[in-house]
Length: 283
Image 1 (tube, rainbow, N blue to C red):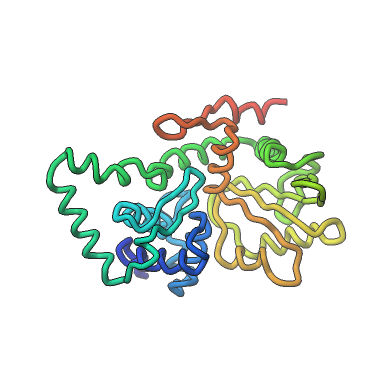
Image 2: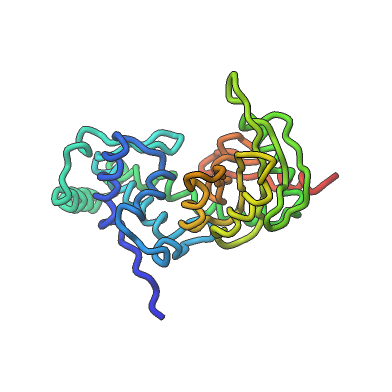
């Protein structure tokens, strides 16, 4: 059986522009990664081709597409992963993109000084530098025991605005691993969470099992995994008429640990401290 064909970055650039326009001119990179497959009507076989254990081939190529769009002045990004259309990107047509890329590549070929001044966006792109440290961090997380991963998730939720967070069960398919109260301001609501510390993708069946365990106990859940979620599981998590389940995959988990400075620091690229994670396995 032949390998599914993932669109190249040059073919992904205008769809990124179109989706940003549709979303009002800005979007988090996760939103872009989630919406591009629908926009291009890509099959699950294409979407699920992996580049690394925490990044699909499509996500990797989208990172390059965004980097090139930034290099030609069509989009810009904040330190929190939000990409925004520039005035150029708001007006550019599909046919204008490739000539701009070609011109920029010619500039890079003029010499190191020109490449340094014009090509710095590519050399410093967080999108492209993040893959290696995330792979290493996921390997560190996979070394935790199931209970250790639950305790780390408990700490993560506390740092994210949850109170009264308790680990109440052992890891297991369909089970509830913990409970907390999310209190963003004046209101609060109970949230159950489940932790899946393994490689691979979480399917829609796991979402339904989690909901089944929540039945009669709560109306909101969070599922945290070191792996990924299939497109079916993402659709199931937000299905109308069913309790919502918020999903945190391995990529987002790494980003959250970095943003909250939980065992991860930023130097030239993010550096994690193994001793921080090992503490969750010590009682």
